[in-house]
Image (tube, rainbow, N blue to C red):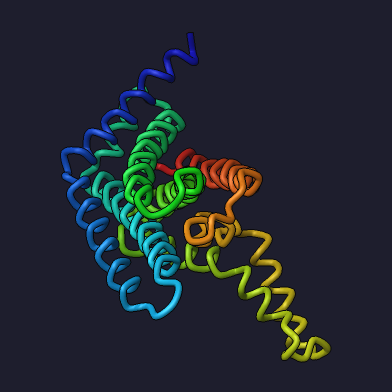
Length: 261
């Protein structure tokens, strides 16, 4: 009975979240960005001297991934910030709705939007890359968007303003995307590994890498360009996604439960 009582508010909140995005005409923005990515990919592919097809697929995949992440993140932080500024969150919590039910409902609704976003952008790549590689790319993109969704929801609830929440999210995403390269640079053959300052930098970079998801392994462009993706690559992606979504959700729920509205 209790689980069923909690399921009603969660489903209603998730449904309202999806309907709000649909009424906000987000699909038009998604399609416009997709057309822009297609145009840029075709232009760069034609301008390349060698491996034009591979360059086009790599650039197109990178642009679609970036646009999917930015679109998803911007919508979540602005929607949650607007709801908090309009006192909508206070109204929900004034009702007999558990805060955990509100969070899970919001996260589920945004996860549905991320699924639609990943599916739409992946559908464009079917004409450029093998279908199996596109499916692998799409599933990896969805996992990446789930992590972005959980972090965006946490940041928006914590700051209650869109700008600082998005800046924090952008910093998190860029750092998680580049942390593997930073580790290689910190331990490269051209640095003095015996210097105390270099040891400190290596330890600091390694410590940051332990805290962040390795998004460099997600949604790789070479899967589309050279068909190098294997389904075994997806296991690491899925494990990281589950771990970080649960961790970020626990942090968001802790912040919600301790907050006095």
